[in-house]
Image 1 (spheres, rainbow, N blue to C red):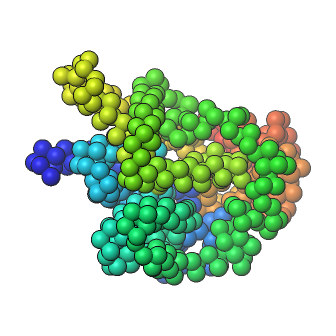
Image 2 (image 1 turned 90 degrees about the vertical axis):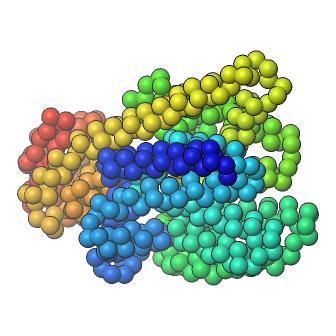
Image 3 (image 1 turned 180 degrees about the vertical axis):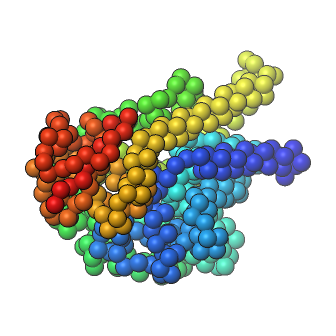
Length: 496
């Protein structure tokens, strides 16, 4: 690389790392992040992978454990639980490095630099690089695997193919999304077989090593739940043996794409209820340049272009299938491994749009215009993540004081019933917590109390309960209110 390109690369990495580390420090631990860190902490304290998922009360721990093992080692080495929060940012930073190498191998240095920049500030990648979630780990391993595989079959280097297989296996041990890499490897093999007549052995070697490393873990949840992916059914059915086709036909799950398109877009671009106008600059700018870049790549039809499009297509298909099967908007996070390829398409679109000799208008001012636009995008993405962090922090603050009270004034054996913040409450209060269920009434709450031997109720007014339930609890002799906050958080002791 030239000196100027090296300086630009260093600045991009520094900026991307600064954003990830800063927001990781100030972002609270909540939701799935609380679950993942609880697993890691449990592994560190026990010295081995636990049999059961004590946090979500499953009889077996079903989630692939690689992320948690690394986080547990950090905890064990430093004796500091806070350090585990920085595992996701570190994977996010490494993803910037490997994405640059991957795109540079396929295209040129200028496209690779732009790709790294867009990946550094893409809200979905940035956000999941600051919370304690496995998304950035699987993204890094996906890009690393594909990059090594490309080099292996291009140079007929078996060592690269073995390393690619190891990366594939580790990705499977990080999240089940890693299985999608199989489709990408097959597509790349097809391209190179047609061009260079590469050996089928190369593909089989990578897959064999990958499955050898990662597949054994999935026997455990299959034996426990009848599903290799755990208790939440996905494709292979659950204990009820439903399948996705049945769900599409009987429950019309395809309606999620018509009923909630705004929520899906908001989730993908990390927009919250507090989002201001500046936060919409990044979604608009990157969406338009992505569409333009995609059209240009489809027009060229080079092998490198096909690889990027294939990665985006495969993970988009995974997201669509998940949404149809689960009807949960959070499935969009399964698209994380495609973001480096998507950023590459955006980078290609920007270069074609602003550096094409056919565009004469403002051509001599393109660098100034690009600098202005990039500054706006950086500001927009950063502000969107700030708004998201502020929103989550405000929500957590509502229940944090209540959880401090529980931790201080209740016994360690106390069991809680909560109306929707279960993971957060259990992580903050260190107490066994049961979810009351959506739109529960007093009768259903009493059934849960008897079934799980509940000691306390922690409810937020007008959240997760049927209207009027709080008033019934207030007047019932079965409960005594022991905590009440300005944020309408109520804690009741169950009278035995």
